[in-house]
Image (cartoon, rainbow, N blue to C red):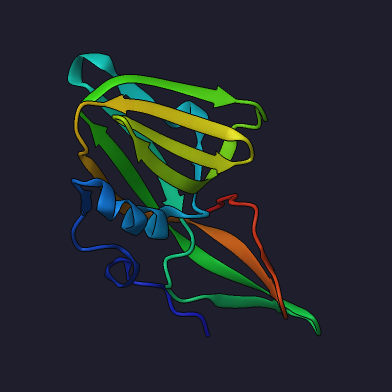
Length: 162
C-alpha cells in the first residue's frame, strides 16, 4: 500500500541561502538535474531580481514502485515546487540553442560578477550581479513524476502530472 508523503518529509524547512562563491557548490548539489521551464523565468529589472521556478524530483523522498521489470523499475515520486531568487541583478540574458522549453540545471559558475547557469540541453543563463545573494526555497508539494531505474542507469523526463 502506498502512503502519501507528508510535505514536511521532502520540503526544506528553511531556504538555502548563498552569499558567497564558495557556497555555489551547495546550490549545484541541490539543484543539479532538476527541471525548469525557460518561459517561467522572470526578470524584474526595477527590483534587480531574477526568479527561476523549478521542480525538485530528486529530493530523497519516498519512491512508490509502479512497475517492476526484470532489468528496470519505474517509480513515482511527489514533486516539490521550488523557487530560486537571485538578487542584485544588473542584467539577465540567456542563450537558448536547443529551443525545447524544458531544461535541467547542470553547472553554476561565478566569475567577475557574472553568474552563469549551464543547463541541459544547451541553454546558458547569464546573470550579471553586483553581489552574490541567491535563495532557493521550497513552495509546495504538487504533482507527481516518474523515475525509471536500471542496473547501471536511471532516466526521467521531468514531466509532472497530477
